[in-house]
Image (cartoon, rainbow, N blue to C red; front, side, top):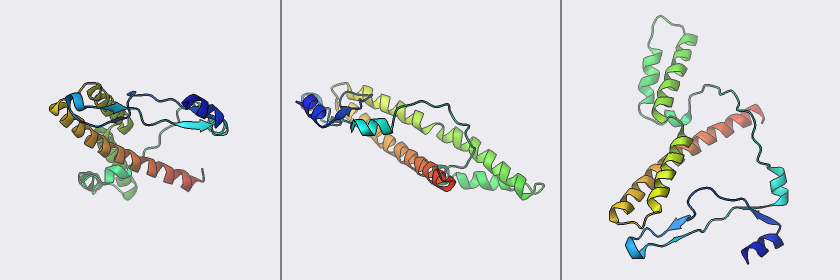
Length: 168
């Protein structure tokens, strides 16, 4: 029935990567239930408008990320980089950018890669019939994942804001 409905509405399932189940009731042992609730579909016009193409990676511009500025440690990094009395403002700004970039990449690394790693951990835990300890681990990882996703959302908002400034 699902296939005929999709065909009748000119929709295609866009597919899904990850755990086959997208929902679980987080109950232990024989009370544990898993289901796939989410499907992502699009019509042929949408698929034609947004083809999946791979372009060459663009050169990354060094910038201070908004998500870094929400970290309490960022203030001391900026202060430390700015304190050299032998440098003019331009060189101090260059130092701030360099120090923040080193610190931010070291502390936050690649957020999408960290998210994928946490999602893999979560997926492995959810494949088991969970006991109390496993459910606690799932909840902890879900909290960490929520925090990472908020950071990623801030990063994307900054990227979109910069695209609009450039007129693209």
